[in-house]
Length: 204
Ligand code: ADP
Ligand code: MG
Ligand code: MG
Image (tube, rainbow, N blue to C red):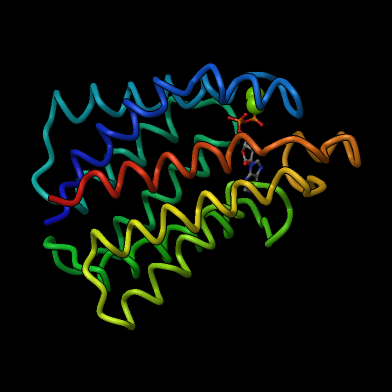
């Protein structure tokens, strides 16, 4: 069973624990606020989910989307917000299996692309989310159980995040640095790994 409340809770916990690192990464190639942006956003999501607990995965992720879009000023708020909004809209049945999760995750990724126009290799959160989506799709086709599928997705997201170190940024603030962005891990790709890790931990 996939527990979407646990997903958002776990995401907030992992962001909180890694906020300083996310901000340091953003200090190197951006404006040093990715950790604080994500901390503010995910903490606000937790508050909202506690005050008015949603009943379904679709409602939970939709509420998370609205709060993230509203409470995060930086680029990452609307991007993660759109991810969750599209994820929510693509949930067909509440008891998510691998195919259901893969479909919703793919829809979320498509939302990030619709919003930010990032392509593979642009050094953004896309470069961690897209390999995770591909791993989930493969596992859905192979009939792999959701927990194992998300193990694969975490590994794929981590490898994607690692690969951003050598990339030249073509989207977002880091792109202003041009070649000087090379040699630094992308902050958004790093937080995207946490999103997938939290999903793995939400399978019960
Ligand atoms: P800001 O850049 O507005 O300060 P954040 O620091 O919170 O916002 O988020 C920066 C992250 O957002 C980047 O590391 C990158 O992963 C992601 N990002 C920025 N622009 C885009 C885009 N157009 N498409 C996808 N991701 C993007
Ligand atoms: Mg920033
Ligand atoms: Mg900023």
